[in-house]
Every structure is written in structure tokens, then in C-alpha cells.
Image 1: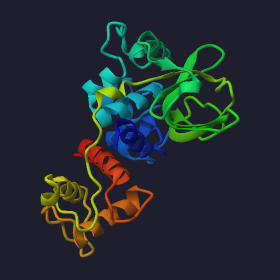
Image 2: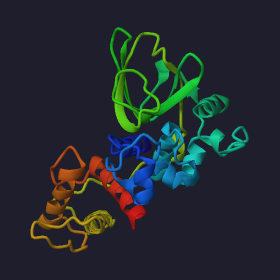
Image 3: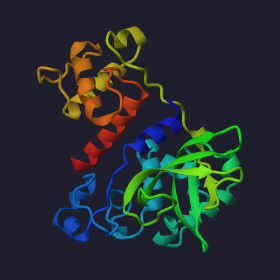
Length: 288
């Protein structure tokens, strides 16, 4: 699983998240970690909660993108990948740090910006209106047809499910935009993160019969420990023995996890399931 695949799989888990109201947040700060509960129109999110609590209430499309990169790759690496550790990026205040126009221009300054003809999954799209760059998201997929047209699929924070670009919409949504031969008129540019800094994910596909000692690693044991921490059990309700052997009990726990967290329920832990486990562990950590 390469860096782009890891990022996309993690980001897709956020689809459907709703921003919260001040009243709900004041009653219980942890409400920001609920996907739908406490919904409001006040720009209160878990993304601000973890990146900068003092910014709660501010527009959050850019911080959503930043948060996803930080969760998948760690803050220090994310800042390097996004060119936020360069001389060109000298944040004067918090607004600059998460102002979409500044990010769009920063990618250009670092010669890491392209137009629609070269966009790829994992790039960051910057949308413009008649005045300026005003919204952003992560590119999930680019489908191109023989006639030069295509479809761009994104995931965006602080948007809505309506057609076209929607800023300050209050939720995380996967969206699609038709592409003409000339691209998309509402797109200013695409930022290209430096994925070359990241090594591919070495985690194997774990299925029934997998044994760590036969593969000279401990990934099955890591999986069993993660499932125990997340509260998933075998069909008898028992915790898994962390022995590095994927038997019936481990398969049962994988299926239980998949039924809630993935599109595929097959008892095999591949890239989609590993990414979902990463996401579930990140949520568990902040709630401890």
C-alpha cells in the first residue's frame, strides 16, 4: 500500500462527518469526535480541536486536509510533504496557516502545482470563485475518457453534497465534478504533495492460515492486538490471543470489524482494512 493509497483510504473514512454547534460543544467537548451527533452550523470540528482549539468556529476546509495528512504521516512529515517547512512559508498568524489562497500559492512557489491535465489521486485541489481561491479538498480519483473529458472525485471538508463547489457547507463529503477537455473552470490549481518522502506500507494481507513466524514478521500479532484494543472479539465474545496465528477466532474478529468499518467483509486484512484500523485507532487514542 503506497502513500497515496494510505491517505485516500484514511480520508474516505471521514465522509459524512458533521460540524457541531457551540451549544453542543460547550456541554461536552468530546462531542466533536461523534460523526453526526451535536450537528450545528458553527464550524466546530475535531479537526480544529486537534490542530488548534483556539480556531474553533473558523472555516475548516484547509485544516481538514492538513489533519488528514498529519494523521496518516505524522505532523513533522506532513509539514515537509506539504512544503510548510520551507523559507517561502513564513506564517505571520493563524489565519495565514489555514488560508486556502496561501496554500495554493505556496505550492506554486515550490514548483509543486499543476493543472487539470496532470492531476492525479492524492493531489490537493484548490477551487476559485470570481474573487479568489476559496475552497479545497483531496483528490480521490481521476477518470479520463478517450474524448478528453472525465470526472474528478474529491473528498472535501466544510462542504455539502449539492452539485458544484460548496464552501462552508458544514460536513465532509465525497464529491464529483465533470471535467471538460480544458479541465474544470472552478479549479485554480492542484497542489502536489511530496509523496517521495514516504516509503510504501509493508503490511501484508493477513488471512486464515497466516503465521508470523513463516513470514519473519509480527504483523498478525499487531493486528490481533489492535482488534483487542478496539473491542472486537471472536464469535464467542472472547479477546483474541496475541499469538501471531490467524485462525478462526482472528477471522471472526476481522469480519466483525469489517461489518462496521469497511465495504468488504471477507475475513482478510488487506489495504482497506488496515487503513480502517488505522483510522479507528486514531479515534480511540483521542478519546482515551
